[in-house]
Image 1: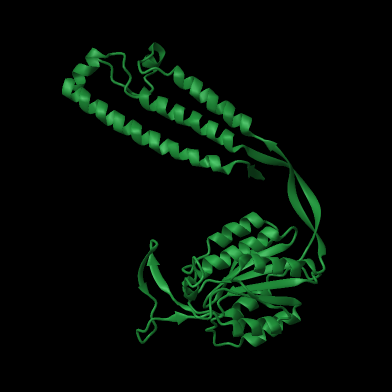
Image 2: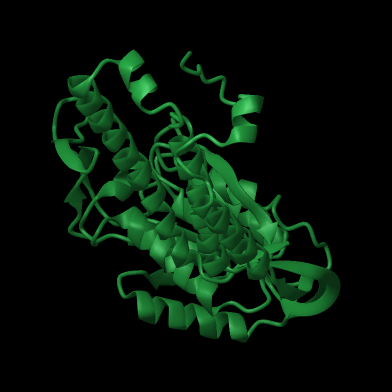
Length: 348
């Protein structure tokens, strides 16, 4: 298992393409200047010991050295020991609505981004609970199986968007049905499902039967509403620029509104509660208190321990390449000239 201490230093790698572009411009300028001075054959006779390929070799070695130093600053660590640890927690599944109505901007920056922030903040409050993520619109899709890897959960969460599912609508019943398959521990007494949505349910099937089945499986359902009762239009954007507004079959602009009634009904039937997601801090604090009151089940999880720094290898390699770059001269050396590694033509 690899762990990176200072990921921010990865941004320094952007220096490399800048250096390459500058080098190419310099080579083009030198070539044009030399052509104005003399033709190629005359230049080879005037500078018989000059290598036309070592400049590129020097650049490659320099960039390897620079990359090594940057990786040393990042400080990769390797887990050298796998331990089995005991944890206590509940199993939590987040079902996030990714239908087009979640693009409405009645909550800044929009409903979907608000939903993702809510889930991320909830994850930050967890300690040893297992989590899974579902994306749903006209159908439900498993985004992340139940796990203790919060880092992976946040990564998958941030990648969610309204284009990931082609089937539009808001099939809450399918999300609930899929969630019942996520809980793989039969001994877990506390199973929690959080549905984050604006409550616009366009599924034809009854949600009540899906909720009833979930309750029979020992799942407590909480709903978190994102949006406003006043509602908003749905902007259609491309590359961050609004092109139009979403319209219905009659050509009228669609106004999407938060349906608290549907979400409240689902939560009540699911033995949970409806939570207003407008105030992120208040919503997360309420959820934290609810989870603390639940009984925790002890389970075993494997994790890497005794992480050892590996920066010294990268720093060493980087310094070595930079040291070698100093001794690579632009002129040909006798033994390299004999080997002719770069297939250079020598003047007669």
